[in-house]
Length: 260
Ligand code: C5P
Image 1 (tube, rainbow, N blue to C red):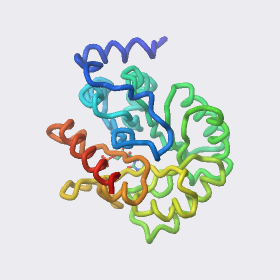
Image 2 (image 1 turned 30 degrees about the vertical axis):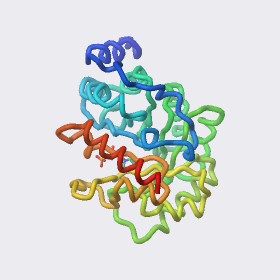
Image 3 (image 1 turned 90 degrees about the horizontal axis):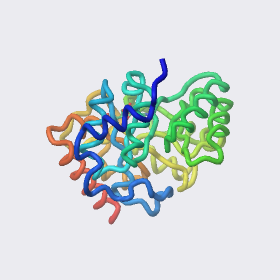
Image 4 (image 1 turned 135 degrees about the horizontal axis):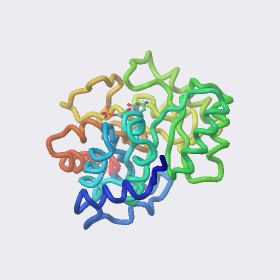
């Protein structure tokens, strides 16, 4: 069976009504480097949904406020590249969070396929080893896709930043653009790897919000203060009674932290 990866998401996007409507600025004309990025360019909303329809509805609701969405294991396993095409059809960026961890050739080929989908960011487990990391970096070389190394999952506790910083050093040495790490390690990573080396931080929680399975939790303001370049937020937005309000509060918090 042949699946047209373009028609389905565009139709769904239109069906969701008012989705491409008013207020969406030139979100895809984002600058790459962190120094010029405002709050909107730093927030990545995790689309952890079981169906394309659910994800499309959430993107439609938030796209006038948000420039990045993350497609992870749940959504990609359910509907594959259609999820990426759906987000791109709204004119915003995709972080493909599939955390590749395999032999070097397979990792390199997976990155080549992801680059073809037009994702702006993807990730590979640093634990896959230096050869796999080099293959990943080579597969994305010369493209606009940023390759990040997964260090220690934020659902694990750590005994200080040492293991995460070591993973970041290896990722940098192998040509990756940055790492996924808690903001607790961000300062040490920037010291070890330089300010241009990206730190993308999940496990962001407003002070009173439940952590769920996350452990190395920080607030958005703390993450920005620590130097995280991008903040990945899922349930505090997507499970909120009013997701747009949750985004607006986070953007205000990020903006205020950027001014300090
Ligand atoms: O709902 P919550 O805000 O905890 O979602 C965090 C998102 O970031 C999830 O989609 C999770 O898979 C992802 N993520 C993570 N830790 C990493 C990489 C990605 O929590 N190291």
